[in-house]
Length: 256
Image (cartoon, rainbow, N blue to C red; front, side):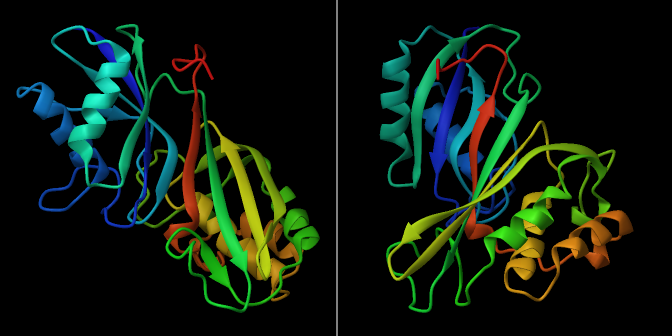
């Protein structure tokens, strides 16, 4: 059976996350229902990673097995037709080898978190970012973030319901930048690792926001990391600012 990789964008607001759940709207279900319009006996898709309720994606990757050969552009167009009006788009399709697996073949995942600092309510980005109304000290936040780089036991920054076998992960990048934003500023968190614990990125951001607001010192981040205690973590940021931005594979299925 020919196998295809799908690159997927979605707005997570109307969905109960990526993973199929009985009786709930999910992104996986929306894509699978579109595939069944083309192949009624279609079984299911596998994705690079799960995203929680309200989390978005600009670079989610999934793979599917079809019973016949498809020209990749036509498969993309057909799926996008059947996905309407859901806020989900297949932005690229590639034919891949039978041993390609969207999850297990992945070597790196990158997340972007968008935080807006401004007093006025948001209009155009409402539901797509986390807004705070106070200024943030980026230099202090980056100093705190640097304590998280490398291999650590991230028990403090994993949810109580996390199903990962080990809390030990290697964080390759946690870079914070400021971007111009009308009547305020946008703070972007670029986070990169091979894999993540449940709620790990949102726990990072919520903790670092407290540093930027002046409620915590940068050195407090090291202390709560070393505590290996979930109750030591700062508040978990809301989901709407988080995006699964990119999944890297040894052989790039989409050529970019």
